[in-house]
Amino acid sequence: MIDDQANSHTDGLTNTGRRNFLKTGMAGTLFLGTVSISASLSGCATAPAGRLSAVGTRMDARYRFRFLTREDIQLFEALLPAIIGPGLPEQPLARRTAIASSIERIDSGIYNFGPANQRELRRLFDLLNFGLTRVTIARVWSSWPNVTTSEADAFLERWRTSSLGLFNNGYIALTKISNVAFYGHRDQWHLSGYPGPPQYAVEALPQFNNA
Image (tube, rainbow, N blue to C red; front, side, top):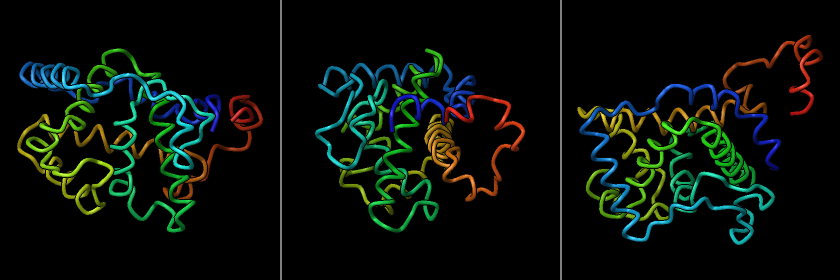
């Protein structure tokens, strides 16, 4: 999907981003900041992935990633099947397409967030992508491309039920941006019972036609 198409479907994600995803407190901020520095020194990629023609059919090479790195994309490829679950199509090609399109919308939405939220999400993603903290903090032993859906689901459940607010907020951030990116697209409106905007709004507001 091209940039304009992705931008037209990220209003919900962008509006959500006006509030901080991770309210970590001083200790959490220092911890995430340390992880980001360590990840950078270890060689973890921090540059946006750009166009992914080399990835093949998993992503639309016409879309240019402006926030997510290749490692972030692999993270969401592993997490989205656990987060969205039965909402994803069963047919393999349709499933891959739905996941790829959702990741593109996640990237477009985060790109339109404010700097504070972008910094917090970058620290969160670095924590999950950095091998040492992926194992010790997330308790995920395999690299994300090798993580099964059941393993991803177990990780999310650990963070959801953790007694540490940092992990709870990390869980909320990951699931919120994923659900908004997936269910906020018109192709998935019916799954949440949303009938779509009223016809008078579609006719009156040009953004609906542009979308």
